Length: 250
Image (cartoon, rainbow, N blue to C red; front, side):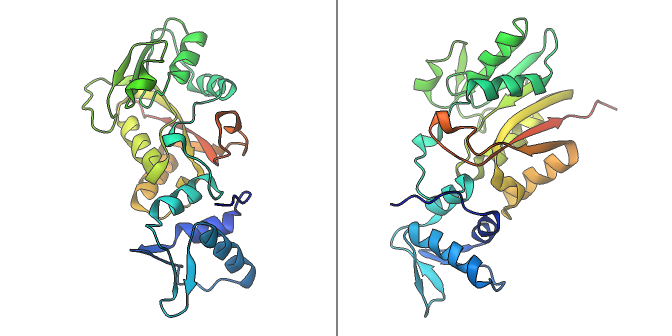
């Protein structure tokens, strides 16, 4: 499948509003100008869809959900996902730790730890902090420099609350939205979360994205990261860095 360069924000907004019904992808009802339609059509054709005038949809021969979702997350067609694992580059990890503002003796959670790049960065800067890492993939967990709980963060019932959370969750099917919302629940009052999310959370209309966007609007802020922030990890996925602060207890 051919790869195209970064997709414009307008086209991404249209793609995020598409409706999938079986093998058919329906464009949003709003009429598109010619240039925008051409851009969107090119993406859908690269994903394997073909416009069918009778159906009034782009028709695929295979389920289009995963391909369209990855396209919206990455802003490009046919990027390889490496099973969703893109380690956080060291420079970005250090920047996230700086924004985290860890204090002496803080407990720090990394809920989707991979090989532990973020907790390692936290320990480099703050050797006295107490880190807890969780990773669903046991092969990755074994490569971490710190003890790692093997399991799916979403399914784990954690009683512990943490002073800080630092995270780069999986993005597929808006998992970043779900992980971020749950991680915020595990912050202590006055705690802070710094995480990486796909840029789709800023405009997608699905309930998961809306919930995460409302959380960010209520308790924090976000900034768009440069397009090449994860290039050394094998992707040009469009990402943002989110900072959330849990209010102090009343």
